[in-house]
Length: 211
Image (cartoon, rainbow, N blue to C red; front, side, top):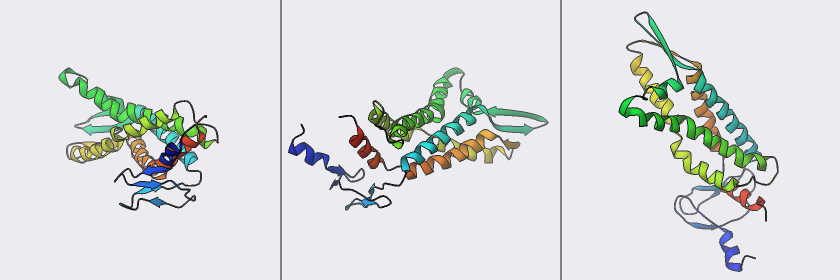
């Protein structure tokens, strides 16, 4: 049985920005609890937020799969045309000393984003349905949070847009379905991250874990 000191520590939360300690209290749905020192939002529970996040994560995964297999762009120049998929973009660096770049690019724009979405769905789907967390759900969520800065689909689509502006001066460029799927994916990802209250997820994992 936990002692009084352990229970007192469990009732505290630290601000992720300034490390200020706060006593954990119930926050009504729709309200926000902010850090007294830096005004960082600590808790912001929303009605059916987990269900919405799971649906957005599933949508993002479908868009990612579509972006991999559909044409990304088509270039027309001097009577010739060539189209490329996202896999083709990744494989463009697969020769010689640039081979490691292929693995890094593939991991950051394909493997890590898909794995992170799968980890979020694995963590949140059972709790959204009112069940206990899946085995090792806390570890999966911790991994998903740690990999968030390394899933760089947003950076890739921004770099692709800048490159397309430069290429358009040399050739006619037609955007394929994969480009628009990635563009929608960025919007879905922003909505998902906006809805997610990480402190609430950790609190729910703690409250519903098997005793």
